[in-house]
Image 1 (spheres, protein in one colour):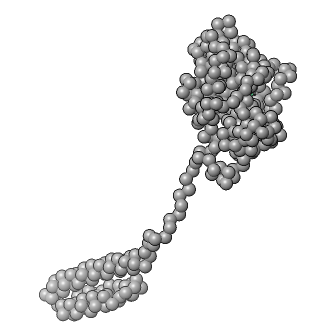
Image 2 (cartoon, helix red, strand yellow; image 1 turned 120 degrees about the vertical axis):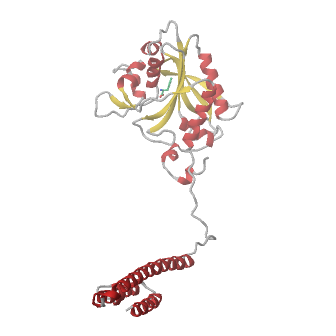
Image 3 (cartoon, helix red, strand yellow; image 1 turned 135 degrees about the vertical axis):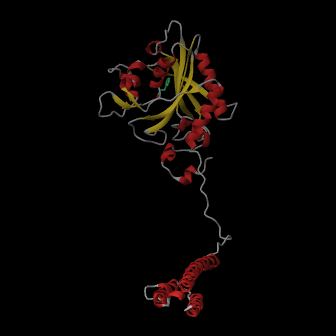
Amino acid sequence: MLQELIKLEQEALAALARAGTVDEMDAWRADYMGKKGALTLLLRSIGQLPAEQRPAAGQESNRVKQALEAALEGRAEAMKQQALNAAMAQEQLDVSLPGRPVTAGRLHVVTQALRSIYQIFGDMGFRVEEWRDVESDEFNFQLLNMPPYHPARDKWSTFHTTQEGVLLRTHTSPGQVRTMRKYYPEPIRVILPGKCYRYEQVTARAESMFYQVEGLAVGENITLADLKGVLYSFAKRMFNNNDIRVRFRFDYFPFTEPSIEMDIECFVCGSKGCRICKHSGWLEILGAGMVHPTVLRNGGYDPAKYSGFAFGMGPERIALLKHSIDDIRYFYANDLRFLNQFG
Ligand code: PHE
């Protein structure tokens, strides 16, 4: 019996060494360790041995069984390793292949203009404050000195919502009163950037969605000269040109008195005249003025004691001039051939 066991073990190990696939290994397991496997049959016959031979046979058969199980496990592991080695040898990385280019993002040209604006006004002591895009008729018009019947409302073509008195702001000026109410009675120096919306024909110089940057300074003894000084310094820095030509002209806004606008020489055409400057050689980039006493009062500030200036500028217009772009519609058309040129 012991002889038979040892013979079986040798035979089984030799067969296992020849098994090269998973199927062959399964077959091997059935042949030796399965229900009708050679080892199983031998084990079963132990019961028929004379009693004095049984313990030794039992011990030896256990050893053989364990040896075969261990061998099977070792063989399976070896095969796995072999398969892995083969795969690694075959599927080598070709490090000489050019990689996929990483596309780097960049800031939108209008975002770049906005950030320059924040920087310049930041240096002059203005902090950035943001308000809402969806506004009330009250803040967009009424508190800015435009009651419901006021004809000046026609200057702002408005997107109304289905909710009475709720609209998309047509300018950032509603932020003036919101800011004053927030900071009263402190002196104020803020800029209020954000998107504005107008129900208008889109042209080379006007979009229906665009940015504005509102500016507001409130305090004692603030004059129109301060406003002009701030705006002129801004223009020089924004366009990197100390000899820049600007002009101030009188304008009308219900919420400022007096009201002015600032024009910059049109760099798009070199002041020769183009569709951007409406063939005038000048482009209006902002409206401004001294905060109207009624508006100061609506913000909580006593106009007998306080005065202030406000302005509202168009960053897209500024970006047009800065880069000599001849159509505002490029900004939001999402054409990468255009956008990739900046930054
Ligand atoms: N809100 C005005 C506009 O949209 C611009 C402006 C702002 C004028 C502040 C005066 C003061 O046209």
